[in-house]
Amino acid sequence: MNGRAVAFWGVLSLAALLGFGTGLPAMAADWAWSLPNHVPEPRVPADNPMSAAKVELGRRLFYDTRLSGNGTIACASCHLQARAFTDGRALAPGSTGALTHRNPQALANGAWNATYTWANPALVSLERQMEVPLFGDDPIEMGVTDANRAEILERLRLDPVYPPLFRQSFPEAAEPLTMATVIKAVAAFQRSIVSVDSRYDRYLQGKAALSDPETRGMNLFFGERAECHHCHGSFNFNDQVVHARTREVETLFHNTGLYNLDGAGAYPFPNRGLFEFTARPEDMGAFRAPSLRNVAVTGPYMHDGSIATLAAVIDAYSDGGRAIRSGALKGDGRLNPHKSGLIARIGLTPQEKRDLLAFLGTLTDETLLTDPRWSDPWQAER
Image (cartoon, rainbow, N blue to C red; front, side):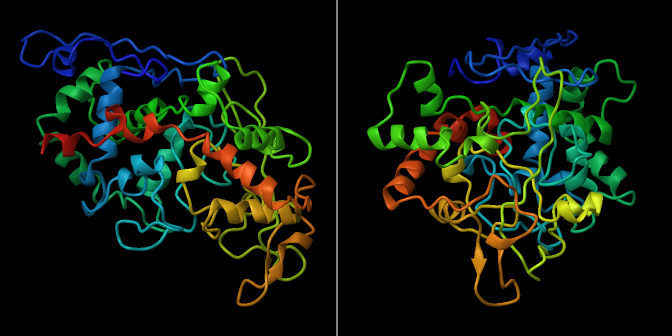
């Protein structure tokens, strides 16, 4: 087990941990974060503490299609481990086939996010975020409704694995298996998905070296020429970060000049960013800057998956935005009046673009993509 991975699972097997087959009550599981020095511990909600049993329960629920209304998709259907918990599509189909409006986001290191989804300042916990795919109806994703909620919970009760896991995970609850505890368990599993073992992390610890192009790319990234660090300069390579020692939380959203439909800054409905919550013109097209960890394997990119390759993303930022020459989305985003002042034409050279791309490749955590702690437990048992 990798020493830089997120959770210490202990030496007991899960069966022993939960008391299966022993005739004794299950013992409470401890949880400890094991992180490199440059990564602070995340903030964990007081009403949903971490435990090994709860994370294992959440893992099973995350991969269980029975959690969707019609039993056809799981959380994992749109968040594949091999792709750093994205799915390789611009938009993802929900349980009824309707496509999401936005690109499925990577889940690793979500424990440190200040807000969730692409542009909702009100979603400030993984527990609240989980309600969106479960209960949302525009579009329908998991398709949980008041009409099918009892049926879904009964599906879980009938599986002999679940009742003891719920009891172990929520020992104080009069009824451990409810939709509220389902949400808490999945949130705990998501909180456990931590990516801190990239080659860049090892470089910071003196355990790996970067090549000359990667080093030049790193200097570009953190320097004032490319200016990437203004929105992606934290240990998590984003700018909305909260951790156990955080006192003030910044929730920044940015218009990066992707669209300008009418020459006055319009973005295509329903992807108009923070504007959808504030109705302020200056918030049109403002979205949360996602973490760039594992970015080489999480394409396509941007809030709507409209840029296919990482090289093309670098081109757009080098140009100070994107100009769409024809079609329904025609417009020059470089001239968007609401574009962030951080997005300006910098005119990177071809070599600089290659160097930047090389550095971004060092942010891939190969352990994350294969570690069995975050894999499909049902597949392993088939």
